[in-house]
Each structure stands twice: as structure tokens, then as C-alpha cells.
Image 1 (cartoon, rainbow, N blue to C red):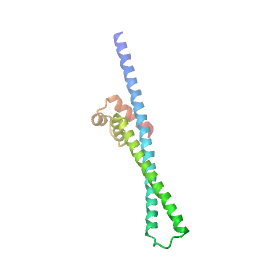
Image 2 (image 1 turned 90 degrees about the vertical axis):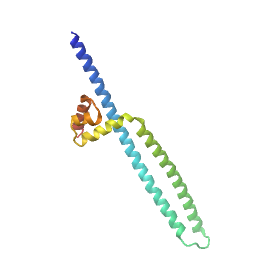
Image 3 (image 1 turned 120 degrees about the vertical axis):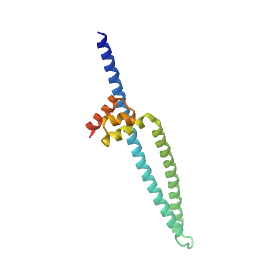
Image 4 (image 1 turned 30 degrees about the vertical axis):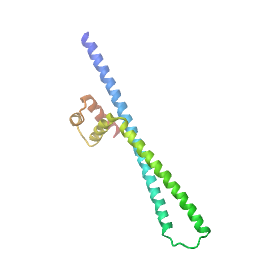
Length: 150
């Protein structure tokens, strides 16, 4: 009778641990996707800023002539481009800060991210247990999740 209770409690504890692990894996995947989207946005902003700076340099290198309507229009364009560059730089800083916050948000997820990379590279359950200091049940769960996702 007592053995049945112990078995039931052990099974319940294992089930809860597996549910928690799945939640951590899902959260880490979402955070990785968010980081990837933010990196793509940051790359796009950097490319745009480079283009704007290149145009600005081209305007500066043009020989100076008598002031005309064209010069005034170019000055307006340059001013707008400078404003856009300033906005892009500010947004880039905000994205970098947010990226850092997301990376620091869950330090425990780094362990599972490393374990997921090891599983993807073909690591065995024993290797996961040794490298990531995971219990056997969690290592087996990660391995089976990877097989289902592949």
C-alpha cells in the first residue's frame, strides 16, 4: 500500500518536472525567436543608416556653387536624412537594450539552450546529463522533443 503511494507521488513529481521543462523549452524558443527578429530589425536599421550616411557624404563632396533652389532642397533632404539617422540610432540603442534584457531575463534558460544545441548536434542522453548537469528524465525528454521536432 505504501509502495503504491510512493510510486504515485514519484510519478506526479516527475510529471510536474516534465511539464516545467516543456514550459522552459517553449519559453526559450520564443525568446530565441524574439531575439532573432530584433537582430534582423537591427541589421535593417544599420543598413539604412549606412545608406543615409553615404548619401550625406555624397552631398558634402559635391562642388559648391552659387546658392539655388536645388541647394536649398538638398539641404532640406540632408536635414531630413540626419533626423532619420538620429531616430535610427536611438531605435538601435533601444533594440540593443531590449535584446540584452531578454538575454538576461532567464539565466536558467541558457542551460537548456545549450542542451538543445547539444541534442541538435547528436549528443546522447548520457552526454547531456554530463555536460549540462541534467537529470536523466530531463535529458531523455529533450532528446525525444528534438526527435519529434525533426
